[in-house]
Length: 203
Image (cartoon, rainbow, N blue to C red; front, side, top):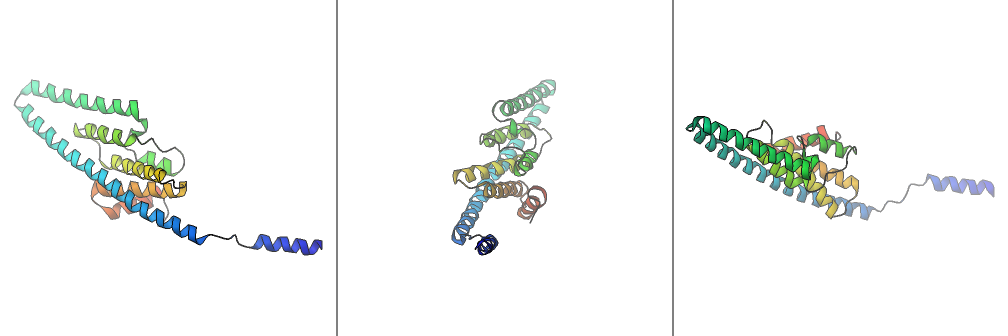
């Protein structure tokens, strides 16, 4: 009897666990639908950021042209406005969302690797306004970093709203980051390759 019992236990241990394929299919469908929403939301925020930066560049060019006729007073005014905009951007980051400092891409990579927690959702308006002020006043910064980080934050927000597990949230984070980059450069294929090569590092 002991031999039969041991054989039965061994056979039970060799059996594959039963997988609920219906639940798996439903989870995959929800993830696919959420990825479309994430892409649209990230693209919308990224497009709004691009348009706002274009308007800020236009305003800065107009002010610089106006300041040329005012000589030293115009120079002082442009310097004061740039310094004020930069100070407000720095204050917003330090006061409300320290995770918004820098380009944002290293933070997204650290979150995807499980090294850092995702930033609070307040990062989105802080990154948008702070980036607009800093880049708009002429600092040598790019729009791709803020777009990637805001896209990832939007994806994380939607993943939490729909109560998705971490593997799904991780996939959505990568998708949101790629959508942000695609919007920043108007290059959707480059956004997808960026996700595969730099963020998830697997196909």
